[in-house]
Length: 234
Image: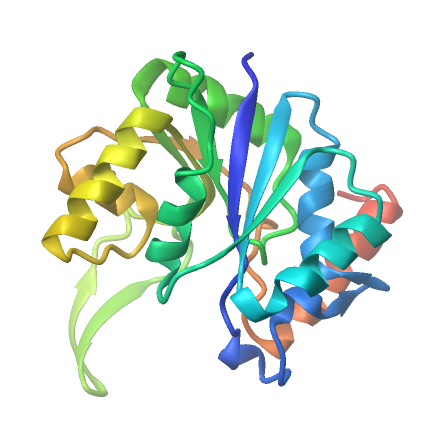
């Protein structure tokens, strides 16, 4: 297992959360959401650095949070871009190569429940293959529609719901972002940029608890997950 750097984009406004502020600052079990996420990587000895990409006007507030909660892993806080893809690209530029083409993780700031064993498998897979993602099999029936009219039922076998972290060799994902920026290509996630460049992406099966907090209802689910983990149920 080799050391890695994680880039965490946390510059989104989170409008669907309807909180009136960046959801990263929302309190979850008495602690800001972003701190929950940072602590996952702080507790992993193989995480050598965290690059946190934030809104420019929130840089100072984020620095204060990191200091207040005593995050011990080195954290580099930088301003993000207009889109998530731009923010990730800026974060990747901060990662030290060291001539070894290290593995770098990209993880949503609003996903605080990723588990260490999944991170370990993801890093090992990316080290061997160059690109790997965490995903879970789709459980619900998926349908295509035109407006509100169903046009087809999609075969569920082989469909995966993609999560983060996503892991890559630094040179691979930096090149993919650079090519996408030059071509004006906007992907749905970082793996889609690697795919667009013709790279093979491997899947590591994840956990359905690894939710992204997007809506007010997600906060209720998150509180339940924290409560159950404290009780030792999950």
